[in-house]
Length: 277
Image (tube, rainbow, N blue to C red; front, top):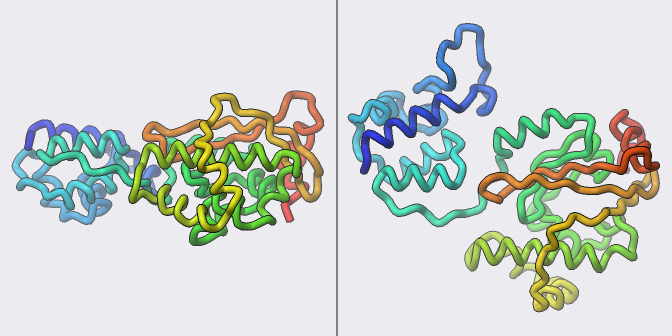
């Protein structure tokens, strides 16, 4: 255990975390650059005294469970969590997919896109948060539960999911979804949530099983997406994707070519017209 560097690391991460990042009011009398020790302690489910002693280089040797709590409370990235464990004298834990919390930096970007169709999704196709224009364009994709939370699962098990794209585009879209799931499975391995999703899809869809055997690889270029909207008809859009640092979540932003008919339709969505039904 590197007590001095652990204390410094905790202090720097506490200073960089803003109250609004964790849903706390900033208040007018806040003097600290980031969060107070007692606020971090509460987020980590630790006593303020215990946490303070860690930052003062005089605390006990924290357990792996304690470090996991601190990692969650400080909203550490996967890389930062690994570093925290190494400072605590432990091997880095196996990485698992994060929970449904949108990362603060990604959320701040999404909040600035209120007039644009944008959403945050996991690499298993689970939509965590959408702007209002995204709901108008795609429907509320956060409402699903169980395996159906994954677009990959819905695409291959629920025919209604495919209505949003022209039928001619279905084969290419199927291959794209399988290629992305293959990449996530290869990264996370057996015993992961990606593996569980694959195990559920293989017996459920012959189309999925056939594509899975072909090992498709995602293309770097984001091809044009054609979306059939129930009120506005066909939109031709590009989906720009910003993947976060540990590659567990992605911010998707839908745009149209300037001056195109699709751009006019996006303006109608942003203005509150043409709601998805």
